[in-house]
Length: 154
Image (cartoon, rainbow, N blue to C red; front, side, top):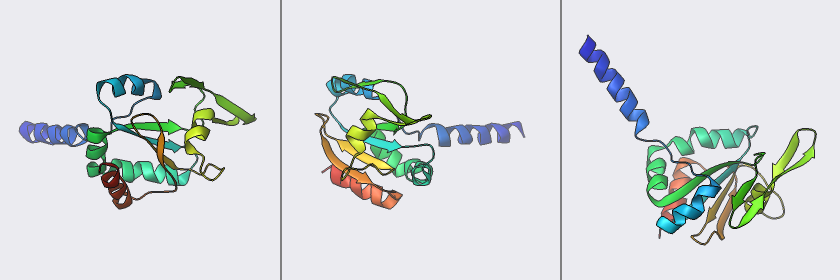
């Protein structure tokens, strides 16, 4: 019985522990790019956005996507309502309040604005020089995201 419990615990830990999506901060990217150049994928979201939460629970839980992101990209999970200052690309970006406990981060606006508006979720891809090469505002299914990752790796 003890052996069975140990096996169950081991497989439970190994199945969840080895397939974790690595998240980086904007501040880490400059240092990481000096070590190994990679494209950066920024997932811009809010806590209240249903499609954002759906993407977190489907697309970013897919094992193939996790493996591809961890191997080939730097992934940043960024809340558009983040209140801390962020230093990225030699610039400091700040939270901009727009009302009573409401606002948006300047970096979310800089990376997530498409056609003069920001709609969540936003997928922003930056090249190795931190230049925007792709912006997409909408839910992306795991199958569609796999296609995007394949195109980005060509």
